Image (tube, rainbow, N blue to C red; front, top):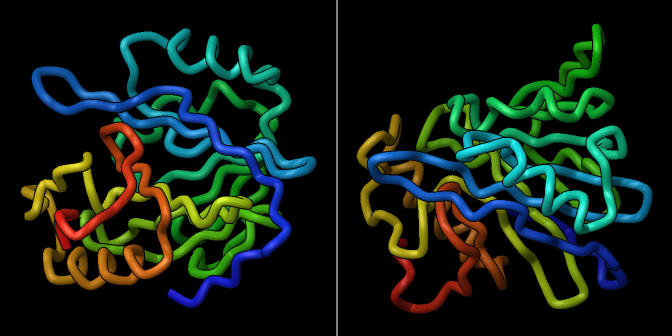
Length: 194
């Protein structure tokens, strides 16, 4: 993963909703403020839409101010609430979309905003991408390579387990903070599943 991180980034990251997996499932939903860009990552399942919209409002934004939405992959638990943001570009592994525009492009290396780039990290699904955010404190990576801080070490739904381990290594080489698909953000260390 060769992602150039701008040293002067003023991007701010807020976790709008901390995800979970168990009898019920919810995705971790992120907000990145980067200059004129307001980026939502994985607006998926939550017990109510208010659990996404209220923290967004507390951060100073309404749904119409969101400029971009990024899907880590197309499972409904990460996408179902994308319609809350009607004017946003929606980004996935092979294109960006808005209204009736389908702008095909590979995700790997695509720059969503000055401090936000996409990286192809297949494994959970063949189409998985991670969102790399440069901040003044280092790189924050939103990814489904981990469900939560404990991994799991082996993704039970992985389409390609070997690719998950390979991409985990790439992410760990740059990430100061990891935001997993279904849990709280964590600082990787030697116990982080590789």
